[in-house]
Length: 264
Image (tube, rainbow, N blue to C red; front, top):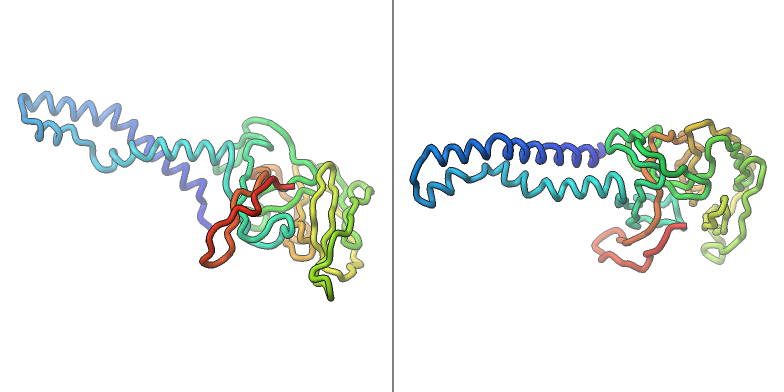
């Protein structure tokens, strides 16, 4: 079962903020009045009367930090770690990326309601979202926006009848290859994709309705995406993946920065 970190962060911020407010409005004046009622007392007794309860002390300490993290994570940028190889070669397992939370509109944390329009997803952009079949973050590339007719034939994308150009780059390994890498251009975005060398004779086609998006992984034959579980709704958009800022290989290995850069 996945942990709903945004919900935990909102609840923790609300709790510590409420405790701080109650102490400021109610309990602190009561302690000060108790000191007045006690009359002339020594310094130790004074400190004991005015001492904040442990829960108040911790709430006052943590609330500003939690509030800053909540604002940054909910409305500006959110970190995300790549869990699978579905976006190879663009993104590798262990990449830590930054997700821009305001590019596609400012949304309320947890419920995801858009409160301020900024921009809409475009074909070719890499997007983080919640798919229709799971309550976890997924990351794929946008290959169909509202109104598009998307066709996938012979491992090639056709959008509104127009073939999306693919240029061969390499085969991996060079002898008896398991994968073929191509440079693909979707809209204004040029990026790398990976396919297996076997021909696929299926022809699949989808028409994208309003408020929905068609997503595919760059590792085209090793990706669970809209071809299998359907379209992503506008309200389930998390944000745009913009940069790799750290890479950590599995196991007891130190983080490295060799893969840092903007995501294409």
